[in-house]
Image 1: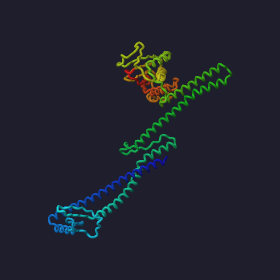
Image 2: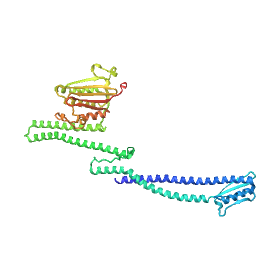
Image 3: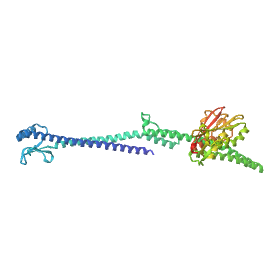
Image 4: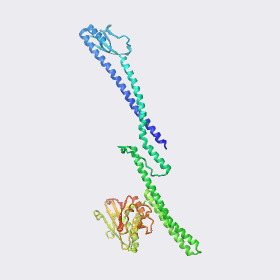
Length: 460
C-alpha cells in the first residue's frame, strides 16, 4: 500500500515532464521554423529590391550604367550578389559571380525588362545556412536544459503535490495496524488550499473518519447497553429455572417457573426484534407496505388502546383534530371528528407503532393528575402529529440522546422499559420521509412533534 503514492507520484512526474518537454520542444521547433522563414523572406526581399535598382540603372544608363552600378556595389556591399544581364537571348552583357560560389546554393530571381532584356540577381544561401546551423546548436542545448528542468521540476512539484496522499496513506495504515480511529490526516494550512482538490479530499476523509469514529463509539455503547439489558432478563430466566430445579418436585412450581422464563424470553425477543427493526429502518432495508393511511384513524386506534391505562393512572387523555382552515370544506363525516384531509401514504402497522410508542412514553412519565394531549393537524402538504404531556420532562443534557438506542435518562430508570421506543419512532418516521422533534423542560413536560409528507388534496 505504501508503494501506491510512490508509483502515482512517478507517473505524475513523468506526465508532467512529458507534457512540459513536448510543449517546449514544439516552441523550439516553431521558433526555428519562423526564424528560417524570416531569413528566407529577408533574402527574397533583398533580391527583389536589387532587381528593381538594377532595372532602373539599366533604364537610365544602359548596359554601361548597369555594369558600373554592379561593380560599385560588389566592392562596397557587405553581402555580394550574383548578377547577370542577358540582352534578348544573347550572351550575358554583365556577369558578376564571386569566386568560390556553388551554383547549386544560389537563390535567384529574374526580371524581364520592357525591351526583352533579362536581369537576374542571386544570393548565396551559405550565410543563412551557417546562421541556422549555429541556431540549431543553440536550440539543441536549450532543449537539453528544458529536459533537465522538466524532469527536476516534475519530481519537485509532484513530491509536493503527492505529499497529502502520502499523509493519507500513512493515516490509513496507522488505523489498519492499530485499530484506532482517532487518527486524522494533516490538512494544509496554506492560503488558497480550499481550492485544492487533494486538500478537499483530505478534509472529506477526516470528516468520514469523524463519522466512522462516532458510529464505532455508538456501536460500542449500544453493545454495552444490550449486554447490560440482556443480562437482567437472562439472569432472571436462569434464576427461575435453577430455583425450580433445586426445589422439591412440584408441578405448580414448575409451571410458575416456566411462565417466568417465557415472560423473560419474550422481553429478550421484543428487544432483539425492535433493534432489528431500527437497524432495518435506518439502513433503508425495512419493508414498508405503502397504502393510503388516515393518521386520525391511527391515532384513534392508539388512544383506544391506551385510554384504560391513562384512566387507571389518573391521567387525562384528550385528542384534538385541527385541519388546515384552507381545507375545512373538504372534511367528510364531521360528526366523527376525523377527516380524510389527514391521509398519508405509508405502512399502517409501522405508523401505529409510532403513535403507540409516543402515547406509551407520554402516559408512562406523566404522574397522576396530569394530562396528555394528542393533536393532529395539517400544515401545507404535511400531516403533523403532536403528543404533549405534563410529565417529568427531560433534562437539557439528555435531550440530544433520547433518540439513541437503549438510552434511558435518570427520570426514566424508575419505569420499566427497554429504551428503544423513541429510537424506533425516529427510524420509522425517517423511513417514511418524515421528521420527529422534541421540546421539553424538566418538571413541565415534553412535546413530541411528528411531521409526515401528505399527497396533494386535489389528487385525493
